[in-house]
Length: 310
Image (tube, rainbow, N blue to C red; front, side, top):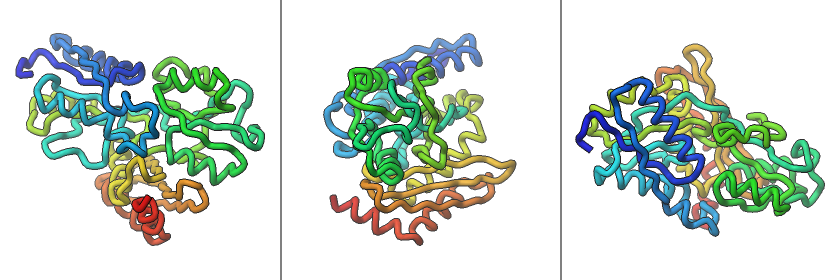
């Protein structure tokens, strides 16, 4: 789109993705009252193939690829993503113009009968779409049955309400954004369930050559969130993290320092490696790379190579 007073946002068509795109739309309209911002909802491959676990069909990049194709074709100017869905390496020619202020990064426990994971009976079925959550659950609660759960937030809640699961685990951020925070029975602590890299943060992507958009979007970049997410993503990138690898990372900013925690696990939860790293906030990628190295020293490569051969 060459028209400088209008912007088209490519977005997935799910309820949560539309909320996120509208949120960015409203922020832009507040900043630039003359700007005409419209949404272009799209159904991605990741949204269409709901019967198969994400890890089996190529991972979360399936939610991003079609939106990037719209940017490349010029039918949209920017794309709004959950940062936890964005592959660790952007394709050549693309840029993450802004990472917005992070919502609650924690995982949420949702059940109609139980107050917490500890209350669930042996054999209780817990639904999650995430290898990261599943490996941590299996490690801490080996008596539970951890089962796959796909679909958008509303679909997943309906499956719980239909009695298919005793409980499900979802990202707190998505529930809060959709006004479904009352469904949360309890929030899992960072120690209990280390979040996905980038969880709770929204990213705005555009073509790297669009200097006009990079400048326009700069006020939406939240520097503390951006620094933390960059550190997390570098750890994941250095460990070849994707949907096929149970891996989590969470960074916090303490004045001018970043403290990053991370883990890599076997899918069955029998082996969980955890480590921490700390460094200057001015270079978050160095902190991420340092944490990846520490996990490798503990034996992360053996877990990663075993997963690669499956």
